[in-house]
Structures are given as structure tokens and as C-alpha cells.
Image 1: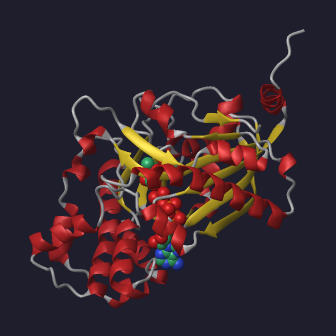
Image 2 (image 1 turned 60 degrees about the horizontal axis):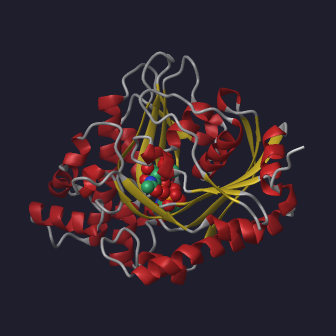
Image 3 (image 1 turned 120 degrees about the horizontal axis):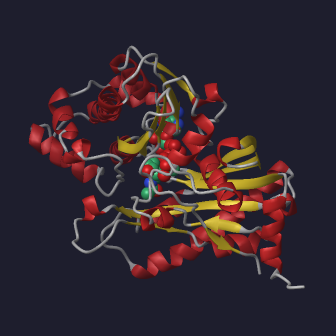
Length: 396
Ligand SMILES: Nc1ncnc2c1ncn2[C@@H]1O[C@H](COP(=O)(O)OP(=O)(O)OP(=O)(O)O)[C@@H](O)[C@H]1O
Ligand SMILES: CC(=O)N[C@H]1[C@@H]2OC[C@@H](O2)[C@@H](O)[C@@H]1O[C@H](C)C(=O)O
């Protein structure tokens, strides 16, 4: 009888189990920390059932954030630093997983798979990079071999490359999780994630209508960057600064005036476009270089809310729309209040209301993608890439 390599045998066994324990990891554009979600899955595709067993966000120490910032979203960076960070992020994430498992008193041997997003350091859809002859591209670092060796758990990673290879921009992958876990026949739903970048999935009530999933523009990234620059704070906690300022409409106008907002859907973006240089150009165009920092934060929060609201009004057409928020930006009351003002006919609540922990949503997504990669079939959703994603790293 033919024998398998023991890792392939393990994978084969995991695929045949009635339920799987999968750790999903996400470390997004906000560089706030590593989200770790331990999920239990049964079945796959539209039959998927999932339960979030444990979740934590382990904040990154400042020196680790500063290290990543040396290459993050930079067109020019130190190649040695990038190379070292690829290994460093992988080993550090492994340590954080082991720490989380210890704190939950969960034995690593009981975990079937890890799904690691890695740290995005550069996102370059061809619309943004503009180099003829070069495809869409994106780069996530934190090599998963370090994770599988250190934890002893089979690890899937680098999910975005297959999406690009099959014609996508490598994001938003939320599409697949939102359709499987968030859609409800007969209900018009929007799943809005406000992370560093804001994205949403429009799930129309009727299955025959087109599902849409796209990045919208900045979520927290500009608010965070301005908080760091002017207040030496990582973010505008509970909107204390935003509420103390006044929205400057002269500045809001050029902020909203970028071709990205009119480009065809789906589209993706990142801090490569939406950064403080973008804000400074808008300040110059509006002649408000000397705006008070708290007014700037208020205006950047309005920018986030208005760009989301404008998108919803234009693209999500239906009755009794229910919008469910997730991501750290859902904790920014200034942004949410302005969104409620702009979208007065839409019910807005946390994704908790549909059984999805709003802080864990993206980590759950990657766990779900790993479950799909093992036992699912490629999902056809409109013209989106019909692929299973993730590369395999085996322990020794
Ligand atoms: N209490 C709060 N008040 C205001 N803003 C908050 C609060 N808590 C979190 N945030 C915002 O949420 C951000 C973190 O969001 P999140 O963890 O969803 O981002 P991310 O996963 O890095 O982003 P992305 O989805 O773009 O990859 C913080 O940087 C901050 O801007
Ligand atoms: C390249 C990249 O890391 N993109 C992230 C980022 O954070 C939010 C938005 O921009 C989204 O497109 C994506 O992440 C989520 C998890 C996604 O792919 O759905």
C-alpha cells in the first residue's frame, strides 16, 4: 500500500474530521497588534457552521511597530530590513500564538490548522502602480514556516497571491467570509469593516442580485497618522480629539476629490495612496495648511464617514437596508455618528447582532479561508476569482 508523507497524512485526516479547530490570524494596516481567533468549523461552503471559541488582540510593542514602519507602504526601503522582518514577523507571530494558547489553556496538539494573513507591507494594484507590463501585486511578510515549525501546527498563509493570479487585486477577501457567514435571504445587508482601510460587502436580499465587495477608502489610517504626528497618540481614543474639533468643509472637498472614488468596482487601496502626504496636498489645495490639529482630526473622521456614506448611497440600493459594522473604526463614535447622520434611513449596528464578533471578524475570515482550502470547493460569486487560497507550511 502506498504511504503518505506524515504531514500529508495529517492533512488528509484533518480534512476528514467532522469538525476542525482553526486559528485565524490578522495583523492589518493599523499595525495595532495581532488578532488571534480560535474557531471551530464544521462542513464548508454554504453549509459552514462556525463557533468562535477564543479571541484576543495582542498589542505590538512600539519598537516592533517602528521596525515595520521602516518598510511599511514605502516605495523605497532597506532590502536587508525587509528580509529580516520576513523572518522576525513569522517568529514573533508564532510566539504570540503560543502565548495565546497558554492563556486559554488550549493544547497546541488539539489545533488542526493555523491561517496566517501575515503583515501587509505593500499593496500595489496596477491602477495604483501604473507600471505597464506589471500585474496587480501585494506583499505580506512573516513567513509561515516559522509558525508551523515553532507551533507544530500545519499553517496556511499568503492567501492573497492566488486571488491575484486568478485575476483579482488580492483583496478584499472579506467577500468570501461575508457571503458564507453574513448573508441572509430576504434581507438587504451591508457588512462594513472600518480598519485602517474601510471595505464593505453589499449582500442584496435576493440571491439573484449581484453581491459587491470592495475597498472604499480610508478607515482609520489617516486619523491614526494625524494623531501620531500632532498628538503623539496612536489613535483618537473614543473620538475625544475629533469631538473637540470642527469639520473643515474647504478641506473635506479636496480630500474627497480623488479619481479612486470613481474607479470601477471592485477596487482596493491602502496607505500607499491614503497617507499624510495625500492630506497635505489637500490642505494646500484648500489653502488650510495651518488648520488646528483637532479640526484636522475632525475633518479626517468626516472624510472617512462621508466616503463610506457616499458609496452606500450610490451602490447599495434597496429597502430596509441593515448595515453591520466591524473593525476598530466601529469604536470611533465620531465616525459612526456622522455615518448615522448621512445614512439616516439605514439601520446601523455592530456585527455582533449577526453573531460575528466585530473585532475578530477578519481573523475569523482567514480561519474560514483555511477551512475552505482543506474541505471546500472554489466559490463562484459573480465575476470574482473562483479559487481556494492559501499555501501550506508543514512542521518539520
Ligand atoms: N476606542 C476607540 N476609539 C477610536 N478609535 C478606535 C478605538 N479602538 C480602536 N480604534 C481604531 O481602530 C484601529 C484598529 O482597527 P483594526 O484593528 O480593525 O485595524 P486593522 O485590522 O489593522 O485594519 P485593516 O482592516 O485595514 O487591515 C485603531 O488604530 C484605531 O484607529
Ligand atoms: C492588502 C491588504 O492587506 N488589504 C487589507 C486592508 O485592510 C482592509 C482592506 O485593506 C482590505 O482590502 C484588506 O483586508 C481585508 C481583511 C480583506 O481582504 O478583506
